[in-house]
Image 1 (tube, rainbow, N blue to C red):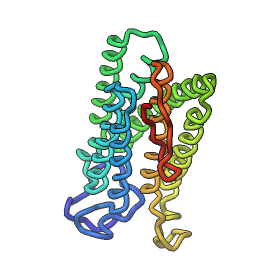
Image 2 (tube, rainbow, N blue to C red; image 1 turned 180 degrees about the vertical axis):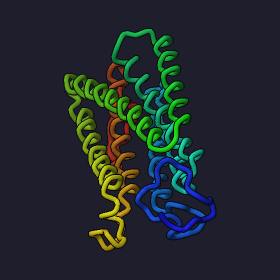
Image 3 (tube, one colour; image 1 turned 120 degrees about the horizontal axis):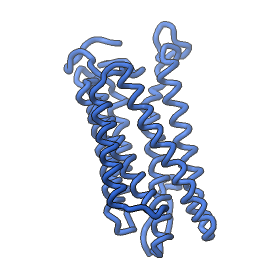
Image 4 (tube, rainbow, N blue to C red; image 1 turned 90 degrees about the vertical axis):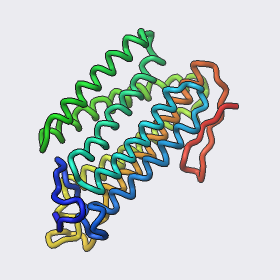
Length: 258
């Protein structure tokens, strides 16, 4: 889309709407790169606030941090290898979340389920990394979004249990998180499909690029934190761990044991 910078030709399967190397020759997509810090910060917040004592939640938070680092590297370079450091951790992160929710809500053999989920995620990772171009992009999006829908259902079940236990203020994290995530999804779809109309160039109806993909990073990260905190609250409820939910600056949910 723009002149070749320090990292050379674009080899990733997708080149986003932001003009490449517009601000510095060392970062391909400036805003998309730096907005990835939102995932790093909120991932670490999830890992550190864990009131459950369950290491899987800490691992989930750290996996979100890894996604943020990979996202930064991907958007900074637009190299296929760096794209994999973004997308593959996303698959593993949501698989960890599925493991936590399924083993909490259903009577399953946790060891066997962990092995099956690990093998499935490994298979999808190999398939995702093994293809390139549009096929790779569609394969990754389909795999990730299917698991996202599964997690939305599991979070809804957690919300229902919290409401039944008179914890409506915690259950409300579900609708708030989904709203943030849906807003982010609309922004992502707009940026992906209507780029030529909103990129500030000749055929654009806007005089400047709104950097919607960068906003996707921020809003999706925020919605994700709401749902992770909801899962923590549900875990505490079922395990009999007393906890309190607070909000930092009225926006960022924070849960801690009493």
